[in-house]
Picture: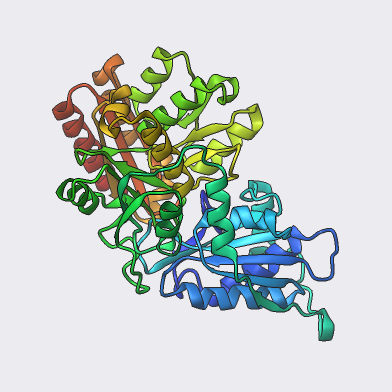
Length: 449
């Protein structure tokens, strides 16, 4: 992991860790690295989510870009995958998304996409970091006509919506769906998108005020949507996170359909239609054991990547796979998108449900979900550095793994975006894995918390 960029861009508390100065310098350094061709005025897009700090950081980032000669096109409030798509459609040299995804509103972040629509590789992020932190190269200081200008894209939202619709072969006519926008970016796109696809939309958490993004809503807080779907007799519900690059669903019974189950449904359909490259699905080491068993039982090849949608994507690009994702709801349809796209995923999932004229609860039952317990342990920055070398923690993990045997597993890892150690256990005995997860978490808290 880099010094500024984690697994999903640069993040921190806005105006404290992610300061205006840092945002400005990220713009300056990134423009230098991304435009080695020497164009006098490279074209760069900036999108943002609904956080209070996004406007402030947008101004700082745009100023940094313009100060080294880049021309900036402001997309306004859009989902992250909108930036990834439009950077290619608008023939831009780079795209920036200001968002901290599923994190609380006081956090914010900056993700960077290259001209191809893909997130930057580690080597390029390291070069940007060296310019900002080490002064590896001086920032250009053009004057007069060498400065960049700022314009606004008027059709960004509609261009994105029309594209998503063009990827879907099955309409949603007759469906009654609940949509939880997390008071985030999908608040400006979801209702229009799914209405145009034919669905009757019932909206939740689609009135952002700068502070309520991800606040007990969206894909990290599914309770409201579960209750809403059942009480209103809806066919199903979908929930997005703050920047709408991930999606989870709720079936007709109010049960959560997580990323693994969504992938199982979509992978089966792709395989049936001979659209699954190498008949393979890329997941992560956090994918539920039930999903890996599902793949094996259905003749699909399961490939495990490191946690993080960027690593899923890297595995897909490296070996020619076209479908993959995470349990958290980041699902990548590489034939259509260069990054996880919650609304595109929802549109395809709902299209499958409507085409089959079956309930999502029945369709998602194709995969048996193994009980899984996840305990997050907040640790100090110093503790995070000591984690890998602590012998007591290593011994505890080995002891738990031996006790679980072949009927379960333990996975303990550092979060790439937050000051957390994540303790995950799976197994057939929920009571057992809950106890072991808490015991392991308690030890980690004691040692490095």
